[in-house]
Image 1 (cartoon, rainbow, N blue to C red):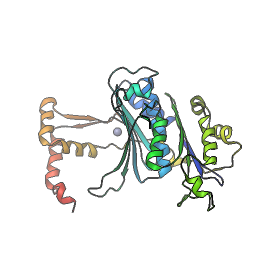
Image 2 (tube, protein in one colour):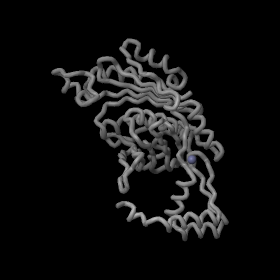
Image 3 (cartoon, helix red, strand yellow):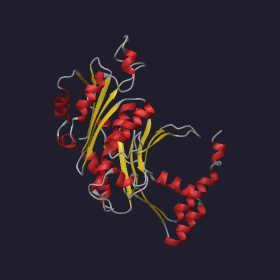
Image 4 (tube, rainbow, N blue to C red):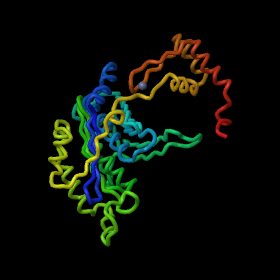
Length: 326
Ligand SMILES: [Zn+2]
């Protein structure tokens, strides 16, 4: 079973999370195997993105989809991992061209420095006209050096946009996608665990909290192969046996991470409506039916001329989109 473990360091402004995606990650890969599967380096990146997206969703407990995207210039056109509030997740990648098995991030998606990482928060009950929140960062560091791992990109993102010291260790292969997140809690605000003290403001400054620094250094010593092969208990004990760890019950049952796709015939129908009747009729004239495949799960949705006509009939009975807003 896939697992998500949350923990705190007693009395210290530091929290952590460990995720292991096993059967759920294999299900993602299985869905894409039918269409040829991915090169090894893309599988690794997509697995790391899936693990990271589950960790970030667990971190902010957002009531909506958290979407992590990497895109730019290179043979990997786009990679997406999306996680719902119940930790149902899905992932897909678009590859065009050769990707070496050991290709670093820059060779896949940041050849001429155009690579980007986007994090989108799309609220579940979005009000009409409300836009999802999106943060976009380049795949490079403060000195414009190309970053070669997703964990560096995301650590950079957290520091720059959330002002949070974060240590991430991510790893994935064809069997498992896993991640460890260590984060310094803000010393002020509702998450304050340190209590009030004269040194609080000092400890709150980014990068100087000694407790965070010690724990992050321990976390960074975890090797990718250890993260992939050891169970959660062993990893946490090995890294933090001298620390006072407060463990929460692991997210299990309905809240365990699992593969889940949010596609539906209704959503595909909406997409066809937005294409317009003319475009859809052109496809029907050429192929006799409209077939749309889901990039995430491989489901195929077919609309024959009668189905298509119904799509646009329904639309005529509804007020135009502009009027629905008021
Ligand atoms: Zn789907």
